[in-house]
Image (cartoon, rainbow, N blue to C red; front, side):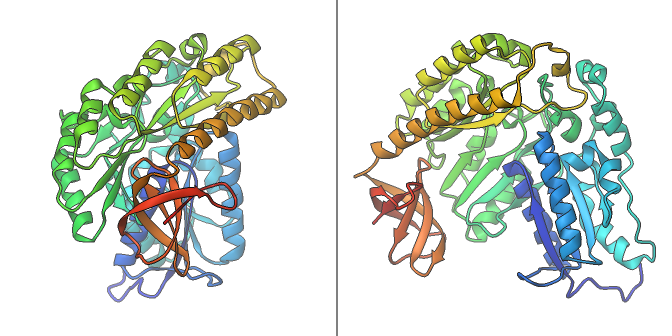
Length: 456
């Protein structure tokens, strides 16, 4: 690289699809680019760099990623287009072949975005290239046999890339863990993100301390399978929670998503009596049928799940409980879906996040014979979404008339704020306040479009 080379003054745009972990990683990349002089482009400006952090959980996600790349190439002619994330990891050749893409990075190279951009702009050879491991990973992801074997060799020793950032939001997202060892039959995440690994408690506490010094007050703990924390360092998830709870200045923590079999009584009891962990849990169910759970290779049954949710309600009656459900997986007959729907009706939860099953190349689920039509998937989704809306409405209305602490996130217009209560009720607040303030507010009733409660 030339000694007089500089990235100062270059502009970047960012597109992220998928989970909270992806958004946290994008925000970290933005901060890293800012540190070397690359600023976020304002609306209407033509950027020099486009960063696309992709998801590949469904074919729809892949399609949205391709659409986003094509759109950015059109809007920012001549820009360096960097594509990373799960889609880039699983299908690097496909991504690299998209016209205008300049750089495709797999998981191993995700933490080296700045150095790749420096090399790109200082070089006369602006060609698409991929991280060394992605070809191998893509081939393994297409193989159902290697999925069953349980360990794609090239992702076994991927490094843990730390991430802690808020982007343009008030809440910070702290990545504590990456990868997964579970190999559910419908899922490619172990092939996209590799085996379970994590940062050390000491390093994560230091990042939380830096958030506090920056004025942050709420941290969302993110990862792929955060309850599996400790495989790299020999530590435990409960010890991480205890250590984070002691960080002065952080008033709120949320656990983004945790497997039901890893949400132990010890974790629940600690959260219930802790200083700073909010009464808010996101627990993937995926199906309310024991037979479908068996076909998915999930590590629990409906009895365990029901007992876990009931235990949350017992210890934290005000808790918001979100649940992931997949409809239309292979093997989900009409009778099994009816069984699942009935079970879900009985759950004392606050909201469902409903996903339609999408077939992924190389997954073991493809060997399950019974398939569900797109029309039937849609109809099943609508039935569960109706249950979700009833449960969410009932949960919100339970708290009308109460006073809850609300973190004001940002003003949509002058004096009109969005925010969330401790138990994750979305509110609108019009009045005196400031971004990042926590105020005790009176929840009055629904807003005009029935998406939030009005607070005073």
